[in-house]
Figure 1 (tube, rainbow, N blue to C red):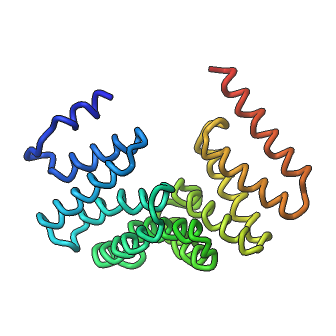
Figure 2 (cartoon, rainbow, N blue to C red; figure 1 turned 120 degrees about the horizontal axis):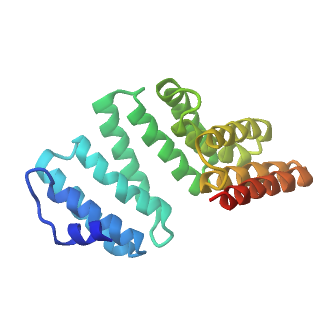
Figure 3 (cartoon, rainbow, N blue to C red; figure 1 turned 180 degrees about the horizontal axis):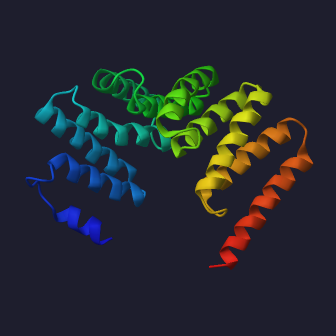
Length: 226
């Protein structure tokens, strides 16, 4: 709250640009559920850095990320508005860092999630599969970024009814997250529920129920130790 109050009154300085302040204000508005206000601030940040650096600058890409994710993730907007922003981000990063860079892989994985929300599961699978080996090479097979892309790959494969591949992807994503987080972490809960949905689709209802129950027990024990 103190940070938000500071940024609300702040102006540009030698170390903090106008766009940075606008993004911070936008994040504050989004955290409070004021998504239209956040949209306006993100757009102003994009315009500010475009005027300062040019439309193809990597800083513009960073500004676009906030706006694109807002359109993708919040139901009050048309998800179709996100697609050209993600595509523009991808072009900028490819030119700046190269086709096989971790920066490009991050954007490719983000686009995979966009396609999932649009129910274009074929493209979702293709983009997640493209990002995965780059992230494995950069962050190692047990990197957090790898688990994120594996999760996205798995849910696309699930909805394409590729259940064998789905299970492998989601089991691996869950195993990585269990190494990185406490049992009560929400990302573990997401992985558990995604994997349970596969078991249910396979008719393994008892296995799904046991997986969820064991996860909740582990989470409860973690809380009891605090």
